[in-house]
Length: 321
Image (cartoon, rainbow, N blue to C red):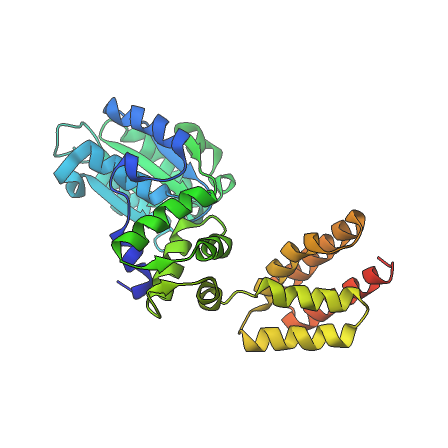
């Protein structure tokens, strides 16, 4: 297992009470598990919010020590063809469970990566083997799952974790790993992770490899994120009409901190709302920021697009669009 994933697995919750966030989902799922009869489930939501962890907890609560014999996990992004559904899934689904529970559980992670043909094959498998198997599907975008599968599942929509939830989990890890962390470091971890608990833990682990004393600056360095203060200087130059100064400061920030263009765009989008300009201008600049990000994702040169975006800020500072 890679270094980046050790803490994520080591501190994975093993019971419903250990999970943070998603309390309403946990309450509903726990009642289904206690009845020893779960339907097919579909977990949809952003990464790092507890979908895979909840699937594991369900299986361990149902089967206890025998959970490995009654559980099959497949990552659909790696194995997403129709042959996987016809062979691995069907072979596992048609056999009875070892324990007293009358069904086994198949967990399909990243199910939205399954091809349409594989999803069509899966819908029939879910129908035919309901008596011996239950499916738990996990995806980031439920809209990519065909309607016949969604109608066969109880859908749970996960949301990004709040700051208090991530802080609770990080404090638990800090205490167990005998680290020290400033309050500002927790804020920096949350800002860098954007509600993704897995990313927060990975950043904490990478930072702890440098020093057991976790600080805000160390988190910013490890996350390779643009410092808000530096981005603010760039935008202040642009709004003041100094395009050359803004361009030079932007280039210096990208090279000094090794920050990608898409990360700069995200930092700019956040800082726009702190600028002392009219609200309608902020709205137009946010729109320009979205256009620049789209072009970069489509393959345009990052620095050219960022310069064009800075030009929009200069024009906005002069009263233009």
